Image (tube, rainbow, N blue to C red):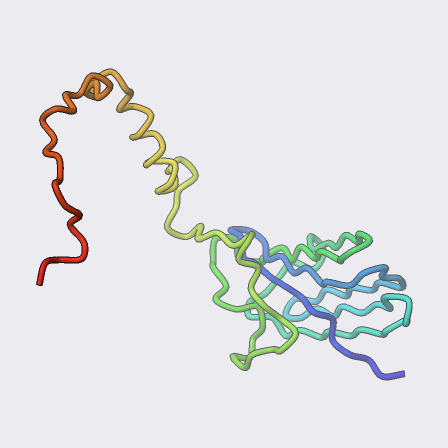
Length: 160
């Protein structure tokens, strides 16, 4: 039986890189962590498809602190960076695109520029809007409607 790579998504954090392999009903899950690479393999689905994903990593990891967790729908690998605080622009050492790998934008965070104390732009905007309050706004309920001109004819289409 042929082995094929499992589809995966990855994202970067300050001290770890996460890779989620999208394999349902996986069994015989094996993940081998090495300093510069890791290998994921399993059998999945009712068709017993064999998956095998060897990855030469962009940076080094701590194999002893790296872990994986299996659920019914996926296997999540947490690769502990050997050098925390250094961002990874990609997962693999090679710049060539892996057709089975994509960025997990739902979990991606640009942590390099943010300190933990900083608020995101959205949080700052929400805070500003909440601090404005409603007391200073003019009361439009009693606006004088008689000052609005009545139109004697429709304004569209324009006269010719």
